[in-house]
Image (cartoon, rainbow, N blue to C red):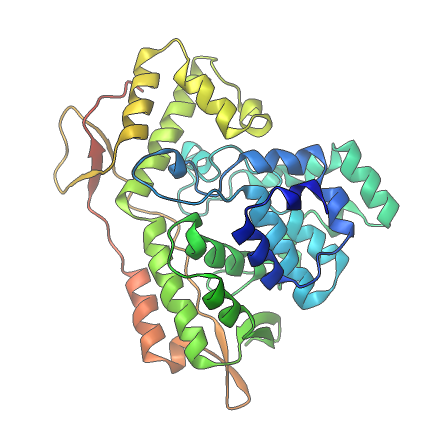
Length: 352
């Protein structure tokens, strides 16, 4: 067995087995490349896992990428599409979408994706493997070209399906277990949407409702006050360290999160390390509708809204669950209308 798989948590091994009973042999060599292994040191939590405000399982960007690849393989048995899923987050920096916050990309959270082709093309190991397998870079560097791998919100793709399943397993918050995940996953099939394009959808309305309900909970958790606060603080810390030449942009793509945290904690700016450690040891966040005075606060009114309005088989037709289920409609509306407090803060001052 591949070293990556041997070292996985048993729960994640069982989860992967649900996603694909077969682990395709060709993935092993690609997983073992330095560029993919670097993703093992990045958590999907966008850095929130490092604060006591959270109780999350470790689930790396590599784990997510492998899981997306397994879903695509399960439904398509197509090597190129599967590799596109494996590589889709290869350009992910430390703290993931926190760096989008640093780049002021709150709504799309896509500011780092343009590096994907560059990283693949400049990897000697990956390029040799692609040449061996007779695959061109442009066939695997953009998973957006494969609708089963990725599509636009609120449709269901392998990427969107995977992070909903794993985040509900504990990467964001423990909401369901492997038994529920298996029930949901086994109910999914490839369907055809309104535009005649293939899309993942559900066979059974009740199971689709269960999935959408959990997705709705998770979507609100992604935008809750302590999450927005944590991502913005980490973004401000990285930005300040970058401005002071304590860390480089390339470090964000080469170092692990553990290594970057060591840089933060041992930097020669006491304000940075002090504020970071206050956040790390905080167990709750403060909120306010009026501007906090002499506090570090965050006020982001527009955030990316992650939600899914899945297809469901209904009398031999494929329809959007929003149109045929009052329960799902209510859950989706809660997601779309979710509002946080105007300000979220902790009692310290961070000198930007």
